[in-house]
Length: 98
Image 1 (cartoon, rainbow, N blue to C red):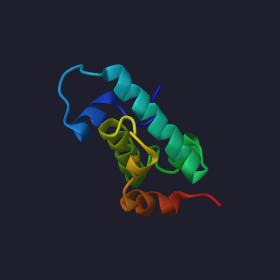
Image 2 (spheres, rainbow, N blue to C red; image 1 turned 30 degrees about the horizontal axis):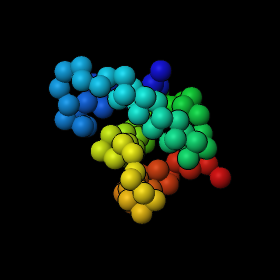
Image 3 (cartoon, rainbow, N blue to C red; image 1 turned 90 degrees about the vertical axis):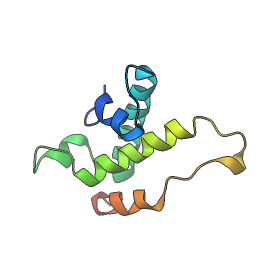
Image 4 (cartoon, helix red, strand yellow; image 1 turned 180 degrees about the vertical axis):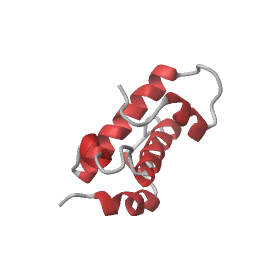
């Protein structure tokens, strides 16, 4: 179950209407959230304790991960793997716990 992304938000990001691929989009959303939380080294609860909501930059970064997963579902070879844009690093860096 997703903690801060919703299917509605993911579909807006990907410009998808209807119930097309909801289970796949949910999987991508959960994976993006897990990846983001692991990357910053903090829990959802820690990141939301001050304001009660996830920082907008981290929501945007998670949506970028979903978009990359959706657009590039499986690489053909190791040379064709898509890299998440540098913008992701800029959005996430202030929240990384050392």
